[in-house]
Image (cartoon, rainbow, N blue to C red; front, top):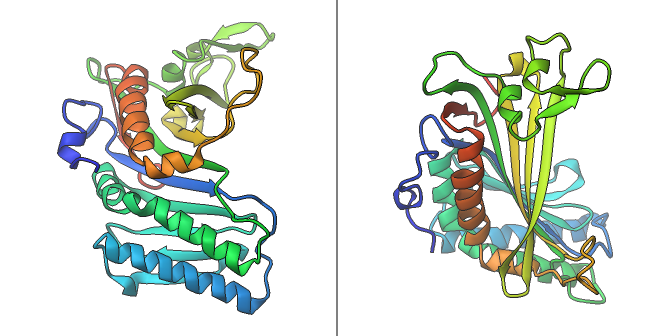
Length: 307
């Protein structure tokens, strides 16, 4: 089981005030085979909603979250969804028309997110399996619907970057320069990134960097880890949007050493729910990437929009 928050962040100066203090959003997406969409007659759509409500209510009870009075169905955007409206443990879950199961938690302090992840995620594999079985039954599928891809996304909105040894803030483009050292100048030739910021002769709109790595997290189990960094010009280059993905999918394209693709194991990240959060987000994103990216620099994290 996931440890308590104090132990989770022990000896990690990047977690807490002046560092990663909040998540802007968390999203788990589970894709089922898109063999049939959810454009169903009203009575069958209600049946899907009723079973989804029952399954989530059972998880709330098992996780000792209770407060089922805060649970309601949501039919917006053509999806079949559920909303758990709770100030500390709230989330929403939807089955989309293309048979993607999406679990979302809005922005909160990292401590609150950790507490929610700790009590809710041990039940996620069983919940997804129950939803897939119910959909196979109600849709009269010719085969059992099983996950074919899973994706965990941890989103941060960081702003106001202040070096610890200097009172003057730095811009988002100065920080991202360590990842992207050059960009096209006025004549198309290479220009260093910091010189093209707010004070430069050529004003840059935004700088984005997206990097992905493949990693073997267990024997014959591979995931793709994505670092997506976006630095627009909002409010004078004072914000950076970061999305970190841990994805279980087919691996093999682009690797000449592989004669065939490696089969995905999407159920593995649902069962081993600690890997995306502790092994990826804490150990590689916060302890590794962000420690280097924001080296000797403090910042703030927004749970919603940047103030």
